[in-house]
Amino acid sequence: MLDISVIQTAADQYTVQVCDEKSSTVHKVRVAKADVQRLAPDAGAARLIEESFRFLLERESKESILRTFDLPVISRYFPEYEAEILSRFS
Image (tube, helix red, strand yellow):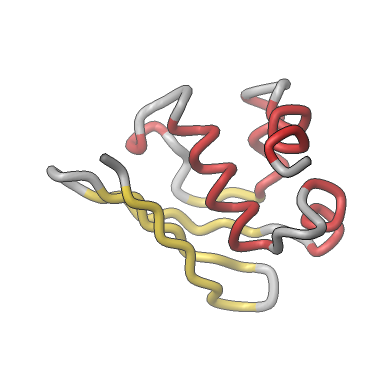
């Protein structure tokens, strides 16, 4: 089972640690307030990032996730991302 930890490090920056029984990865993620308002207005940034990582982990290993990225970049690799995230928070 995977554990996802999201810690805010600056106004729009977060450190995400993904751990399983064998190893962990650390990721730096930026998310603008406007993206939080558009994708998960009632959930907040940390919850949006956590759910975004769940989305990614359904499609790739934790080791394949970029180490540093802006949250909207996910849509470049997975065009269904925004629609899926919106449905998870509706």
